[in-house]
Image (cartoon, rainbow, N blue to C red; front, side):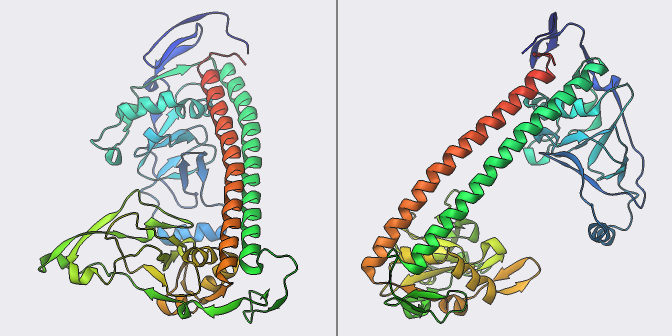
Length: 435
């Protein structure tokens, strides 16, 4: 990579030397605060942490939805192409970008209109580097991250590195091309991960619904979306081989009752697809005699009631990771009684036929879906002989491990590409390399 001919000290805490002909100036010399009132007919824009300023209302349906949500847009701020806008509450996370279309932004945004000839896309790249995000973080007011605000009075005091306009244009063109190439490479790898996940699901589904023997005799399962299954397998409702336990209902004031103690309990957020997330476990105070009805046992299968569609019927086995743990009423505990391994039941809840059962039988409203104890108990359960269940579980474990290794390798490649992109932007935007 080429370097500039001469460098000088930057006078900036976050950067050592810069090209000698570049300037370091305060934002007040480059921008003024635009405070134009909004008007009807303009789209509402937002600033993403990843893509900068964008139009959230690209079609008539979305425009109509926003008009319904907000009929008076005069409280919104007008932005014009060439402006730089940032979210006061999230600037310290990188929510800043160049405006490329006429529109409106929330009153919680600051709009900086250029007073000098500059390329706003250069400033978008610059202010999304770790250096400037750190500077905006330090300049933001608030005692906690949640309350931090970067006001115009602080933003205009920040020092900015300013190359000549023609060099800004060259830097933007170079970075646009190079980052697009890196993003395309990342997208291909992310698509490969999706394909690997699909293939993993196909192999697990094949094992769970057809077994491991390729030439096994088959029969009709009598389940519309399942098709044929091995002839020697049973197909029974889940309730015939297990007990489905509902969880505790929150809102009661158990703490006032005698004999109460603190118990950890699991919520929907703890029960993920294929694992239990114990990073944040809530506690509740309730009487021992009440708590015993909701205590989890090793081998229970935790299944979520629903909410968003991805929360419908997901789950995993509980192995007693926390002593005396309860579960709330939006998480069912399935306790196997006979004929089937808990891990096999847990595996079945994740395969396509069970997912289809949950979505088909769910109670649905807009974007929400839920099941109940009765419907969960009626889930058609495939029951191979126990020895065959063990073989299928071992096979599926191997499948998961193999694909996890492949996906982990690709994720490392993606992380390396993202790091390369960040380094390229930082070195170009700071003048360490010449384009």
